[in-house]
Every structure is written in structure tokens, then in C-alpha cells.
Length: 161
Image (cartoon, rainbow, N blue to C red):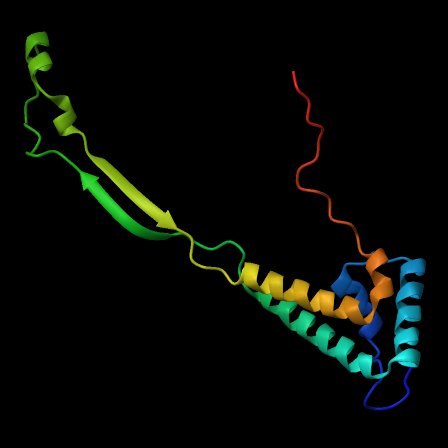
């Protein structure tokens, strides 16, 4: 599938396209990718450089996403304590009347800690990846039908009762 050094497909580009677009592996899908690549090479050879550039950027983003740990440790941003105003007496009341008069909530210690998750590059990298996939699909529009369709987040029928 090569016509010149400036505008030619590389050996792994077919698999890179399949992987970048999330196209399932089948003989029909591989054939469709090959046909789309040949059509682009025949009709618009300069578009190959655009497609290869998008594939390289998608691969770099995928590598960054794979190297960043998904589960990040929360960071403590605030800790507050409420405790006894005075030290706990050595001998606590034993009679019922003494217990009623003794404010036991003063003996409780309350600790409140607020956590936050540090900013992650995941959402911005995912948005960049989607932009590169869209750029690749602009050059190879026939492959859009081979992408798996995202299921709607909420699905159901609204009924009144």
C-alpha cells in the first residue's frame, strides 16, 4: 500500500487504526479498514500523514493513560477535633442521680477529617483522545460504522402511575 515515502502507510497502521477506533476483530472489519486505507491512499495521499499523526498522538495518549495510576490516594485537607474541656476524672459517678447530673457528652472526643482526591489528568487525556479519534474519522469516515455504539447511560420508559 505504499506510493511514496511522504505519504505511505506503515506496517502496523491497520492494527493501530483498529485499536484506536475500538473496532472488534473480524475478517470483515479488517477488510473494511484495509479498503478505507487503500481508498485514502488512492484518492487523497496527503491524508495519510494526517491519519498517521493522529494514530501517533492516540498511541501517546494511551501510553500516558496506562502509565498513570487510576486509583489515587485521597489527600487530607482539614482535620478538626472536639474533645473534653477538662481531663476525664479518675472516678466516674456511680449513683443514678450523679450520672444524670454529670454531662457525659463532655467526655466524648469527636474527630472530623475532610479528604479530597488530587486532580487527575485522566479526563483531559480522554477528551484529547476523543478529539484525535474524531480527526482520524474525518480522514477515514467509512470506518465510523464499524465502531461499537455506546449504550445510553439511562434507558427506560417513563410511565405515570
